[in-house]
Length: 136
Ligand code: DAT
Ligand code: MG
Image (tube, rainbow, N blue to C red; front, side, top):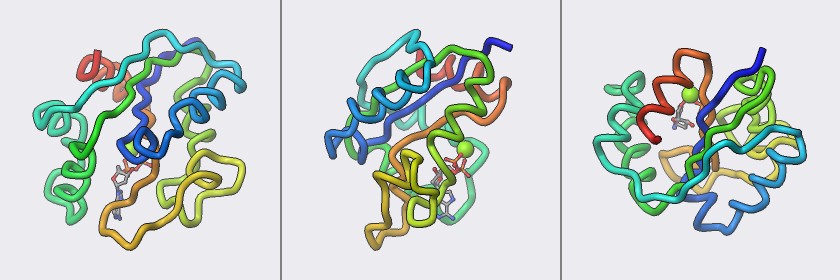
């Protein structure tokens, strides 16, 4: 079924000059980039985006990290793109994410509380529509 998903290239990905490499992988997989923009996230956007994690020990370091530089936001379209992009991204922890994935090939730990794992991808149809409305 054709779906939409919200992808963020996080500040580490933008700062390290990996925007093109990440978009290349998305396009090579065959997904369409329907919308694309670079922006500085606001505290309000991040509070809405990460509402499910409020109160967890990594919440504030995560928000601070996401405010530390510009992000690139994209809407991807394609059949099963929600699951497909999360598969491309790899698992949350970049140290152990599988080689071949964005996080596994390009990410690592940097001795900080926050997991700088390069990308965000929505995890369900409901969160995709909710997150798209936050960023677009
Ligand atoms: P994902 O981004 O794989 O969907 P998530 O939604 O569980 O993961 O968490 C959102 C982000 O929060 C994640 O990309 C990195 C950070 N995070 C999650 N769990 C963490 C932890 N145990 N320690 C530090 N940061 C964490
Ligand atoms: Mg998540």
